[in-house]
Amino acid sequence: MAIDAKLVMQLRNETSAGVNDCREALEKSEGDMAKAKAYLKEKGLAKGAKLADRAAKQGRVASYVHQADEGGKSGKGGALVELNCETDFVAKAPDFVELARMLAQIVYGFDPKYVTREQIPAPILEEETAKYADEVKGKPPDIAAKVLEAKLVKNLYSKLVLLDMPFGSDDSTTVGDVIKSKIGTMKENIVVGRFARFEIGV
Image: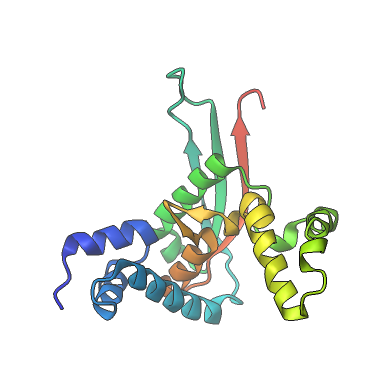
């Protein structure tokens, strides 16, 4: 079926996937936006997993300075993000530059504390896990694990971990999902190195 260019751009804006990938996803899903997003996510995760262990020693630092607040003042806060890849060529690619810029904006807006779940200190994870002891008590191990994972994602990971935070307006797509999709598209490993958030007086 013929796919409207506006629909392709809408999917691109919502997922940050490449234009050709968006068109392919819409064709495969016969124009169904939800199915197209699921297709892109699955495709990106599959490709990204194959490249995730490769060294990413190039990249760039992106910045975001908050320009709009209620008082009409600017420059009161901002963020820096180091986004790494494998080659300088990809580091200069428009999609990579835009991804780094978007991540800096997310860091400022959501104020994450860690890049990955593994960086959360054990005492914080143990304290949060203890809150759900009664809910998983007596359940089969596999069910208990799924319930606990869902609770941690909702109440801890999505609030503290950059890779688990929503990317754009689609809450079902995380920063980690988008990065894995970009890995598949750009054929290079992409890793968030570190970030810093600044706000005057805080």
